Image (cartoon, rainbow, N blue to C red; front, side):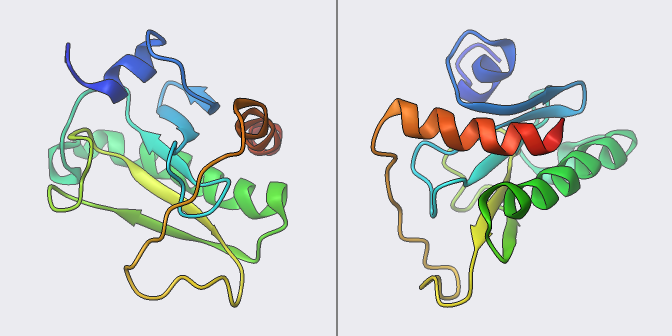
Length: 137
């Protein structure tokens, strides 16, 4: 879709700190992460919500989400992850994407209140992306 920023990231016409780029989708750092290392995973094709993703694409897409959710704690030393999908409500970009957020006990995240932070620089963001990408092979 011409005006979709995630389609542009998938196509490589908009820069992003990618952690993985495979046929099943693209994983890249959220520019306004809940915690540093927060990854968004988007399918290559433009669909707005999870119900629009063809059933035949579910195993590959969620296999990718599973891989990233394992890589984030291994790469960053977090205890686990929070994995979430918004469908329309609270969906800031109308292209299906899954959030994989690093979590540690006592990190302050409560319920669905997601305070946002920023990377200190593009270099810091690139470092986080590289750490996660290295876990994904």
